[in-house]
Length: 201
Image 1: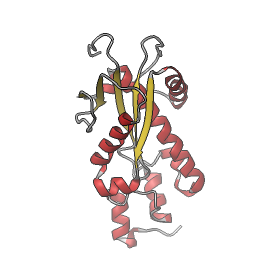
Image 2: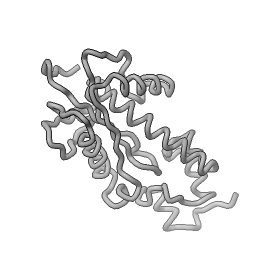
Image 3: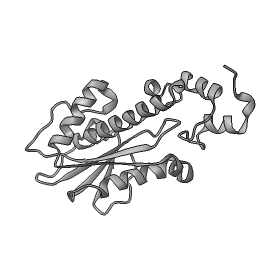
Image 4: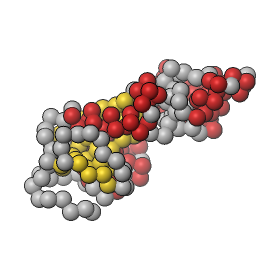
């Protein structure tokens, strides 16, 4: 665990959805309140769906401040996924209702924010505020995928969450590219450029 100055308000920031072929990239910013501790915070990928949902509710209830923001599919395709991720992170930090003393980001790059900022590789495993942000971002994005699944049940979004699984790629070839798909991502772009790759049901 990195040493954090006592009494400073630390904002942790993380994202969910850089790798999927569809949907927005979602970022969260969280300032934890040491007077209201939350046990069990961890990298969201190491938690079950049920654990994430329970912790997300506690984070919203007990954190000093939190915010969730996103960059759209259109922004991802226009800017590229890295710049869109930085934009979503910036939006989340700016949306906080409390000014942090310092911002810590999961990864190796910092978004443009008006506060001292540090990037920490694998920070979601070492800094509780980043872990909390990863949980909020992941749960919000997963909810978006469930909504998409209801609209487009043939694609299986609730199962694979938009990642390029074999099932998702097969659904793309059979049913085509949707507006929610990222047109600049390799497998999607390949189908747009080569309709002969599509398969009949």
